[in-house]
Each structure stands twice: as structure tokens, then as C-alpha cells.
Length: 508
Ligand SMILES: [Cu+2]
Image (cartoon, helix red, strand yellow):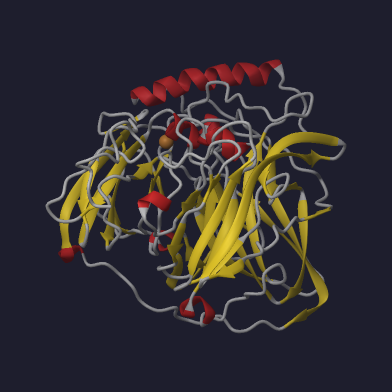
């Protein structure tokens, strides 16, 4: 595995930091520096079975499906012979997969057994802001928080992770994350492999770096994008393989990394992209690469041949016109997961040719907003939990024009809703951006027009977030807040701020 950083590599990191400053200033002076300050090392043979997070047990109480998640400390062996202190939900690392159907009422009892406050945010979920698990719903040590809501959106691969202001990067990096799968009639009719852990697998990809004594390295060395780790794991396993017994296998890819962007694919075969963040595409798309920035998901279907192996790989990701590719992971490529097909494979159902239509009409958009991401500020302001940046009226369709004005990577995540990408610099989006999304990578200096509809859950006191999902950036302020209100209503003091909830703060 990785050795201690060489002097040359350390020097490279200093250069990276210097170039990152240049990148923020918008100068392209470092593009000629070759190589990478963030190479990934993988085992030569992928000999460890992939861990598959268990499906979370639940109980039904008064018509509500209730899950339990406990944030706790533990240890994980990322490298044979080394125990690393990590955090997990109901275990040492990551958490169980929650699963529910559209129309179900759900509740989650979130207990914090850590020594510090955290939160649990339901990434991609449409739900009331008070249940969202953002920075305003802190769970103090030794307490339990019990959000509840109704599943009211298409089947999709969502996830959950902490969102405490200023600490999200650390809490996710230590291991707090898990998948939340939603099912509906559309996903059931799509002809996709759907036996969890048999032909339908969660693939949570994360990178980490270990110190000489085997603990998690939390130092991003001043790199502009944040920490890029040298050990890449799937569901917590480095160099993992998975036995496959069916002709088709469905991988639910989640980039659960704090900063690294991947470009997944295979050397020897194409894949079928069937779903992105918010659910199924209109139809499967055959492609050779799927780029995922932090927080994004993609469901892919891979065809296997009996008795052969295939390696899921991350190729050098196209990050657009970044000033310092060598310092942003753009020059890194490595194997991620080996699929090993049995000598005899069970036939798979045929994947549907069409999954059904959807789409918001720009002619219905009543409001345009613009968001310029620059350094650690959106539209000139860095995150202030006591300030509401945008007020949205319920029942409106809006277009948000989002632009990364830097020459370094950012992406953009919106809570509450799934959006569609209307265009990128006026051009129709590529197939992988043609579905419902909640997070989109922002290539430098390009304008992404996103359309979204705010259907319900008006509440002037509890805000939703929008932010960069490179978690260091988010922690350092690249985030804003919006409330959804009834027409004519104005934003109130955030629900947990001094002065909230008293006389005059009506609506509850
Ligand atoms: Cu960013």
C-alpha cells in the first residue's frame, strides 16, 4: 500500500497549494505542471470480498415504518493488519441501507452516541425542511432526533450523511454515510436486476488517507479541493471483489467522497446508465464513462460473461477547464472493484427500452435566480446560518442559473427538490445530465440552467440548503439557505435561532 510521502510529493503539494490560490484568482498559470499530487494505490489482486451494507430492519407503528440509526465510534481495517478508528451508524463504518416505497410514511430514530453534536441529512429526499437534517437540526450527544415524513417522489438511490455546519467533511470522512433506496411502480416495471446483494449492489466509493500509525489523516495539506486520499474503498473495502451469479448486474454507484470526482467505466465493455440522482432516466443510455462528483449517484447495468472477471475502474476524470489538473485528481486512474462471474450465470430479465417520461416546462417558470460560486462565496456571501438568502413561494417553478466562476472544481446541490438540467452554456445537456438530479458538477466558467418545482412544505422558519458538495468548500462557507413560503409570506428567523418560536412567529 502507500508509503510515506516522499520529499518530491510533499513539494508537489506545496506547489498544488500555491496553484490553488492562483486558480481561485482565476489565473491559468499552473496547467503545465504534470503528474498528480494525489495518486491512488490499489492492491495488485482484488482478494477481499466486498462488504455489502445490510438492509436496515424496521418496524411499523401506526402505519409508519420506523428505522433506527445510532452514530457511534468503532474501528475498521482498511489495510490488512491495521485497525483505524472510524465512525459508523449501527456499526464501525458507514450504515445500513434504508429502503422504503413511495407513499409510505417513514420515521427514523437517530441517536447520537458520539462525543460531539452531529446531524443526519437525507440527501435527495423531498421532505419538510424541519426534517431535512441540515445544520439547523443538530443532534446533541446522548440524544435522539426523530424526523418523520411521507415518501413522495419517484424510486431512486438516495443517501444519508451528517450535515453539521463546518464539520460535514470530517464527519463523512470518518465514516458516517449510508444509502436510502426508494422503490415505486416505475422502478418495479423497469426490468432491472433488483435482488439486493444478489444482482443489485450498493457501491459506495470513498477515498481516504492513513497516517503512518494507521489513523485517518484529516489534513488536506492546503489543497484547494480538499483531501484526496490514496486508498479508495467500496463500502469500506479496499481491493474488493464481488461474485456475480447473473447475466446482468446493477450497481448503485454513490460518490461518498469528500472531494474526489470519479469517471467510472470498464476497459473492455460499455455499461448501461439507467438512473441518476433522482431516479430512472427516460431510457437506458449505453456509454463507456460515468463521471460522478461528490454526492452524485448513478445506477448502471453491467453485462457479464460466464467465468470471466471485469474491473470497474475510475479513469482520469474530465473536470473541464481546471487550472491545476494535477492537484484536483484529474490525472488519477485506478481500479475500484472486481466483478467475478460464476461459470454458469442465471439469465436476467430484459431491461425495458423506455422507463417513462417526465419533464418540467421552462414556459411554466415564474422566477429566475442566479448563483455564482466563487471561492467560498455564493453571490458574494459566505454561509450565515442566521441569514435566509432566497425566499421561494410554494407552487412555483423556478430556473436557477448556476455558474462556477473559478478555474477549480465545484459542484452544486439543492435540498428539497430534484431538478433537471435545461442546458449547459445554452447547449442541451449530455445524456448523464438528462434525468432528475440533486447534485451537478460545475465545469469551470460554464453556466448550468436548472429547472425545479417547489410543490409543497411551505414553512417560513426552517430553511433548506444549497451548496457545493465538495465538503471542505461547504464547511468553509460555500453554502446558502432558502425557505419555501406561502404566497405573500416572508422568511422568518431560522427555527433554532434566538428569537425563533416566540409570539409573532406564527404558522405552527
Ligand atoms: Cu466547491
